[in-house]
Figure: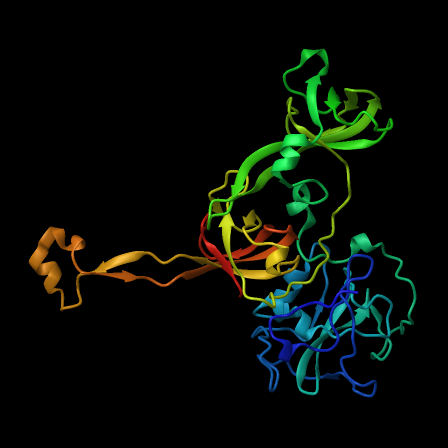
Length: 390
């Protein structure tokens, strides 16, 4: 199991949220078995703690359908990436690391430190709680797909489970659509297309069709990181050969000659935990899908990836570069008075500070770049802005 990193090791409780079946992070021991979680009044910050609880953090919260882990974190914390610091895994229930709609989360204190735990599962009191039916460890009947995820899946669906970053080699050598049946120029769902490079594919094997999008270049050195891969659609092979024939049973945009073809795969894990990077990150924001201005729940690309220490769940603050102005008022406005309309041409240059404009969460990391979702923004986020440790 993989040990999750956090920004401040001194604040880390020994029990962390775990990922089970691709959904959890490893679990350790928070305290000796005799240590009990005690209920107590909500505080802005726990005694002796730097965990930033929200000023209006409730004593308990009932998880609702449609909630994300980010939403729930915001209920209790001013800074949602501190979630791993307050999550108290209750060993009395099965899969305590997973949260489902109907669960009741309770804010308690352990040795004066704020902790959040599951008090009820869908209205049933957890072992050790007060009143109601006690739950014993047993298999959770709800499917894992109903568990709360870190971010809305539908927002990033087109970036998950399909090639979203194409390398130069893939663009050059990957199988491709050579023609469409009946001499069509463009295709859609229900049309048949011909693909080269998959002659060994068995009938009914499903393939995704991906359009080669814009170049993604490193804003720091202009190196080519790859190409944006735009999902077109998918379908099964109906006739083997070279070319092989594919029936498009799904499409989100037109199918064109030259579009690339990849075996359909499932890579849809969005069940990670918001947390700050352990290493220093300074990444540039790259526009995605021709957007030059981004807002909440839009996807951005970063010119740093796993080789720089980034992983899904990492939170980064976005900063707009400060501008440069001329100070014409240093001597009580004398420069402006003497130069009149030309005052803006004189005076010393002053570098304004960078301004924080939002927060992004990494949801997919490659070696040298990542995709992140804009979670919050107070101003427009633009290509060229910097993403750094929060």
